[in-house]
Length: 263
Image (tube, rainbow, N blue to C red; front, side, top):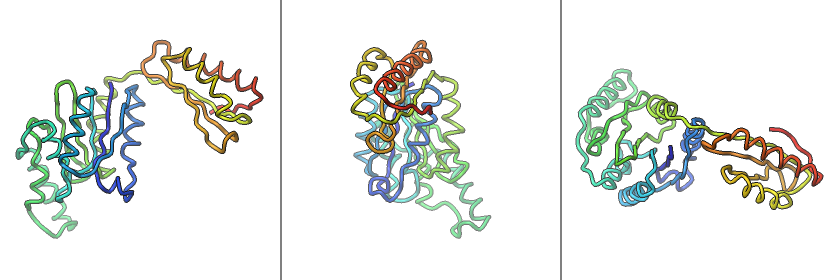
């Protein structure tokens, strides 16, 4: 599957909050052989959310995962922005309403919150785009959402990492596992020669093994240590091709006078 992540939140864009969610999600998408095509971060703005969603849908990914903006405050605009982007109305979802009401009742009974009952702000979280399936939030109050638009499945998750992770593992992870592809990753570290010196040889390898992505990453200084990684998604004989390419680059490094440290 091809997947895109949409991160929503002003706090991400001003540097107040570090976006660890997309990194965490990306690792699990790739683990099961799916391809993450793009990560987009945008502000809490209804028009920007709706326009960005439409742009993503034009690329026809199999899955879109959004994080952030599901809370009770004025600046939590994700659901309204998604609804506008899909040309759907927001409507009160009874399952979501009951779930939110029970979560607040439980928090009040435990003494976590001092305000009892459903307020306008709390009720706001139960208004979902038409056609939504609410997803239980076992770590918080705001439910997630599952939607279908054409052939694309949209998952709308909370921004709080603990809530997002629990929802992802319960709902999305089983789908990724069931529809798993094959992801190949191999690599090594080398020293003694610079990234620019080996670049022409890497270019030739990329042309020879066009099904694979071959990339160098300077790790320490210009030539103290460089990593070369070879990755591929759902490539026939991917393991064999990656091993073959890696062996060829090993030979090049040694011929140039470099030293190799296996990963």
